[in-house]
Length: 607
Image 1: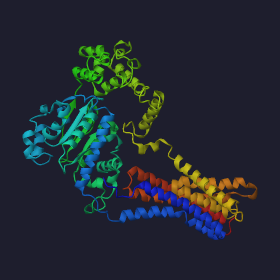
Image 2: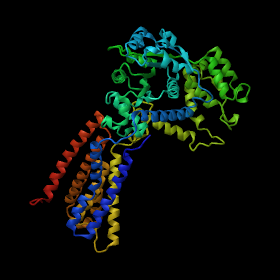
Image 3: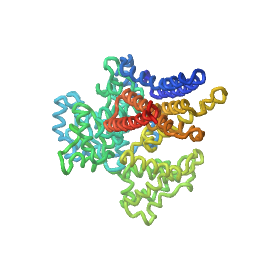
């Protein structure tokens, strides 16, 4: 896909380079000219970085979108990228190793979906994806939606009249893998110009703060950054992602309604119905109980995906589980497959192990724990017989808990050919930290995004560190100039140099770290100089107030450039705008107090 837009990291690189160059240039001018001129230059040069970022944001918002590929071409490129992405992901998840598990399903409970005659009427009235020519392939009733495995493409594309489908199932029943399989089948059999299936994990969406279309566009630009560029000229300032959505060239596969907090699931269904109305194809996956609670709440109006049929995944058949595990172990008769004989015979008789090994998730856990990998000796792997012999495994829940507990040590056990760089203990500690992070930041959502990991750090820590680094940078440059030219001792504090030191550190820290960084940089810079030569001063408050004032100026500039950058990226959510309003309020109040103190000290008639 084309890359015609200016990337944020390129802007950031120029921004940092200009900030450093501005600080160095200000110090050089302070050495070259008189002090009064140096102070003026020190005030102006560090603002070049903010001016560049502001001009870039202004130019980007005002300039007409450049000519680029057509929407049809973008859709073809996106389809290829999506297919490559999920073929790789399917390999990582072992979807086709040794072969896909055949998951059966039946029609979803009638009270959770539309009546079948209503679906047919909507499709015949032109409110669905199908046409009259497709009506011969429509199912005659919901019972005909029953199927398994590779039949999911036929069910969705041919048998559902409206092209809207709900996929329900118990935890670990294979809903996500079925969506991945459907996505790969749709991309393989996609006609030119048709919509592109894209899988969206709903756990990263907050429907109380962001509408569906904005969130879909945001996820598209996160996963495929080229779609953040302006669309073709005929679509005005609309991004490529929004243009594809607006022209129905994206087929959303929405995974994990159950992973949203319970209080917003009904709101999410309402937004999906408004953002993807009748006539738009969509697939929505959820656990059965959570979808039932959202669609038929005890207190409130019933909600469900409008115009949608539904299927509900069923437990794996014992014969399918046995065939899969034997094939994964090398085939019947191999030493690794014979290790499974007792467990597989017990699947036919029922019991806790048979109940536990009835979902794709638990089967995957069991094969990882008990089947040796290529080149791994059998004696290095525990025997599956422990599932039958362990006295504590007397219930389905106990067997599942045992499999979950043993999975991480098995996944990171030493391998003779491909050693893991981490031990099982290190991996478990890291995964526990990520789980706590997801619980705290994502309210239990399972979709971890690398760009959200910064939230694990205290919010005020990065700008404070940036401010300290700004002060250290400013002192370093000053030290170099001082020792390279003995005639001008820029490191020695005086009535002019201390404010200029605080000015530089405050502006640099403020531009990089916004208000906390600016105040910290100025404070560290001025405070460090005064501590070094404390006997020269009987009253340090004027210089400290001066440093805070300069830091506040730098912080305001950082707030301004951050706001412009957010506007360039397409705006902020409601909560982000409220936080920024509060930050500006605190900045203005603090600035008023600092400015009053600074004026009291330095204006004529002051102390």
